Structure formats: structure tokens, C-alpha cells
Length: 121
Image (cartoon, rainbow, N blue to C red; front, side, top):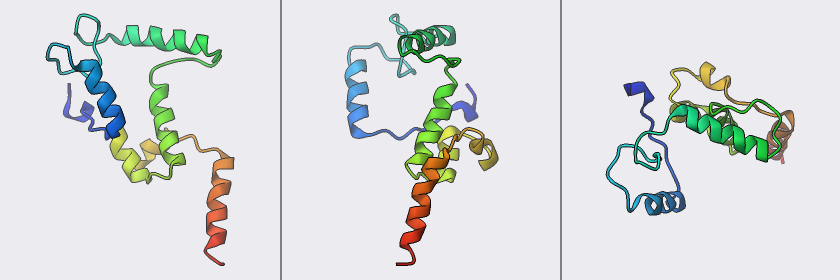
């Protein structure tokens, strides 16, 4: 594990409570989510879960774990989180890198234009 791979991700009190309940009877481990034996989950196992979930949800596009980072970044932008904060949460070294993750729909920007209209009233 490198220093750059360590992330501090804020979470709600509700999510913290759920995770705490899941881990109450576990042996100490450095991982939040583990295999049934308490070890690190292999990426190939997670990819299998991701692909099965996508199939069950009738998602036809290519399913891969990294897509969750793109979704996370896009959801944060839609929640009006500053791009600088998103950059820090994703662990990027530059805003340009973060912008590659954000998939902003034109319809989302229309709301921003309405906000600008309110400035002149």
C-alpha cells in the first residue's frame, strides 16, 4: 500500500453505524470489507460480484469496479460538491484528472442556469 492509495472518506453517521454492526464480531483487520475468512477481498472476486449485479439489473454496458469511482464523482458534482473537494476524495493530483471522471449531463447544467437567473431578481 502506498501513501497515495490511502483515502480518508467521510461517511454519514447512519453508514458508520451500519458498518460498525457488520464488523462487531470480527477479528481485528485493517480492512473494512473482508472475505468470509477475514482476509483482503481479491479484486477478481469483486469483479465477479459487480458483473453478476449488473446482469441482474439488466445493465448491458461493460461492468467493471472502476466505474464506481466515475459514478461517485458524477454524483458529487450533481450534489454541488466543489471539484476541489472531489479531487481530494478521489486522491487525484490535479483537477484535470478529476474532470475525466465527471460525467455531467447537459440537463443538470440547466438547473445551474436557473440559479443564475435568480441573481438578477
